[in-house]
Length: 344
Image (cartoon, rainbow, N blue to C red; front, side, top):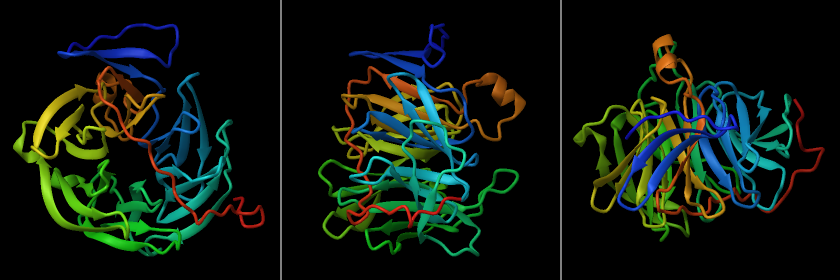
């Protein structure tokens, strides 16, 4: 890879890298300004907008990729780990915040300093030293959402305090995988019979047999192990393409990696101009753009100097693959009345 910096008229479209391959010229573009701990990108195909979160600054952010405009909503409830639109609504979002799953009302067109929300369910007890981290919705509209121990001042995370939960329209969390240290990337294959999952410190990607009818998982096995390749960092967020191959953000590793889970082979590495790469999702009208979130949180002066764009969202184009439409959360087909919403 040759790292270059080109100036564009738009500040939100800076070309920061080129990768030559046999079939295509892969480009990496900065499409937002740097934020804090940017995470959890979700492409909303109905509106052609990209949602993502800024965890410790407690923001939901939305990028209009056509204009480059980012709007933000502050969530007073606590750190924001994940955001997914509610199905059949235009202004409701299911959000993992603090230890809870909450319902946020936000149209997304303007910045909001005091977004209204309602607690849908408590995922973990108020006394637990944990918070919600990553999550996604399956083909039946169930929200799979993970937790982790709260980070210490030095950045360390206490081990084995987190879990992965499944939440359907009954809003009763069901524990699926426990204990874990940092519940992170998760995705299903297009056949909907395999579930992939990451507990970051293990540096492994696990696969489970998946039953979409009842949402159960079984038969765990390891389909990729970063401990067996020469790469720093830990796997973080993850998505899948229509070929069934995984795209994995490597936190502390400067890269997104492309992995075939069936052969357990590393297919490609795409360098990102940030050390801490947090998550990935496919978007764009053809679902052929890989949007990549990164962290600018807790960086040293030296790290900030080396990676001034850390915390930005990047768009990777020219990969020659396509993603799948992301699922929305099914909230029993109902909308909350104004009386039910809590404006705090």
